[in-house]
Amino acid sequence: MKNNSEIMSEARAALNGKWPFAIGTFFVMSLILIGASLIPIAGTILSLLITGPLVVGAAFVGLKIYKNEAAETNDLFFAFNHSFTNSVLAYLLVAAFILLRFLLLIVPGIIAALAYSQTYFILAENPSMDAHDAILKSKKMMMGYKWQYFNIVVRLFGLGILCLLTLGIGFLWLVPYQYVVYAKFYEELKSVNA
Image 1 (cartoon, rainbow, N blue to C red):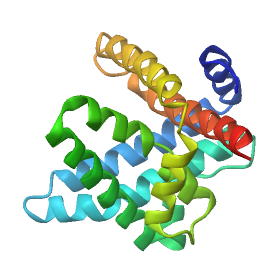
Image 2: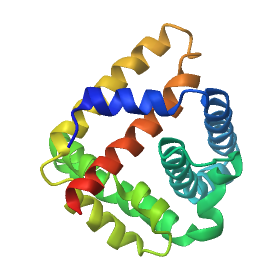
Image 3: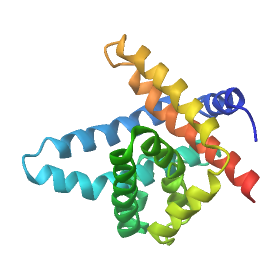
Image 4: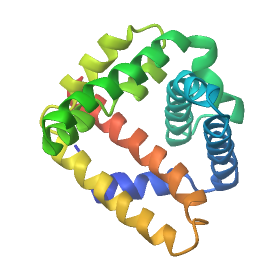
């Protein structure tokens, strides 16, 4: 498996010439999620229903960008047409599993989040897969690679702190970059788990 510097460098290279599309697409996703959360009362239910499919769609877009495949903003809504139920269930199950572990202690919660981190990429590539099976596959794929993934998350978190210094404008670049980095990590994981 490649080291984190190589993964992040290759993700940055994959975005060359695609930044306007990536920024626009992930900005649309952010607007939808923020808009849904602002709706009184019904916004919580709506957010629970759309976040999973949008995250799977974002993973789908990240994978297409990394693989240099033709991607469109409509790809963000991929899961609404192909795996709506699975993506909603995956989102709810992952959130529940992580929350239960956080109730024990912070460290088990972080470990659970790392273990289930590949679930949305798995569903993006296998839309008919059962949500629970995708979670189990993610857990299996991440065995021995949680620390490496954690280091990527910490590096991206550091970039997020720098984005705050730009009054949040830097997030326009960071969010697409983050998804492509995670897509590249997923591709590396697949190659070592083949």
